[in-house]
Image (tube, rainbow, N blue to C red; front, side, top):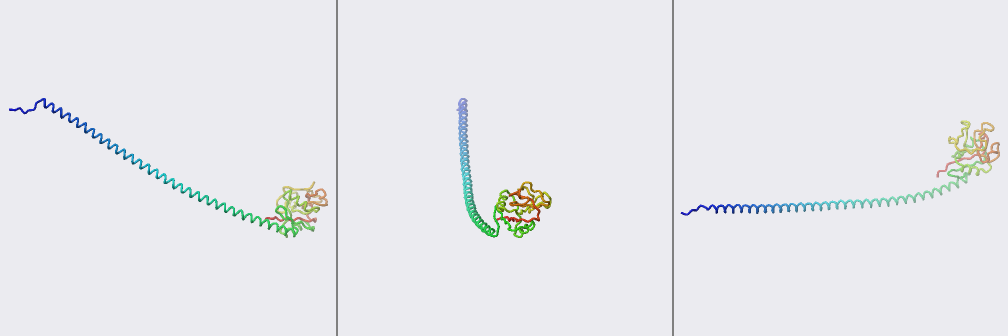
Length: 251
């Protein structure tokens, strides 16, 4: 009879071969899995990179679009502002031309009115017209005459006006619109404003003969004017002098 039982040594070698084959297979499978994992990882990285690139491209496109829109808007606003400035400049030039034209017409009208007033006995100085009478009246009568002419007795506000009136009168003394009859020593103009700067003669006002409540500008003889040539002096309001009317000239 043939003994079919495997030889113990052969069995041992077969088992070792199986173990070796299992190790090889395991090693092969491990390498394959690693390659698969590596491939999958590379694929995932590649996809992520492509997605990042796409996102960057889209962001760049978005930024470019925003910049383009803002530039177009800025350009439009700049052009609009330029147009607006141009229109304002044109309007300003037109207004300046009209103003110059009106100023020229006003000056012509002023000169024409001055000639008319001059023919009626009025004189022009520093935005006012002055009328010097040729007859003599009391202070109240003189003021009434000025009012009938649409004016009032003169109010002297400056040294230049004082000098103009003095030179115009030459050698005549005349009533001015200044009194202290409401309260002795408190001199007021005909517009009710108190006197602040006066051009009184030496020793004036002095109520020399009593109740001298009205003022004249002296350019001639008289008990007070002898010492006050070209200055002011107080006189009784019932005395008679020529008078000076003043009308503000607003043209």
